Image 1 (cartoon, rainbow, N blue to C red):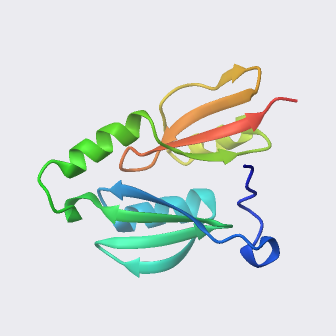
Image 2: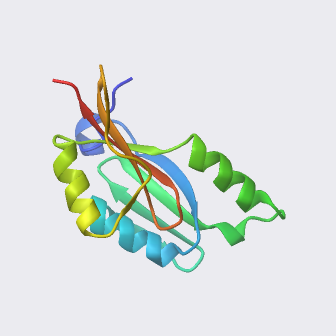
Length: 137
């Protein structure tokens, strides 16, 4: 299913899609996502939790230390940093990379291009992955 996250839900009839990231510092995560990716703050329970929204994507950021069982934060973060990520489709990946690098954002790799398009991975301040993707053609 293809989902246009920029379209307002009242025009599409689709509710918000929620993703949760465990972070080291909730306030730092709020500032990162609102500054670099145009999210808007909707829920603020700093220092434990916050919710930011961009289009139909609601990103919930929770302080990793809030997990109840010892070791949960490390296990969740390790798996997520390898496999899971939020994915932003961009019109000009090179421009986005230059904009973010000049703002001090950390990238995991260089742009990789394949038959479907180009992609690159960057990290939020807690090391959570974000993929920028530009479709081929």
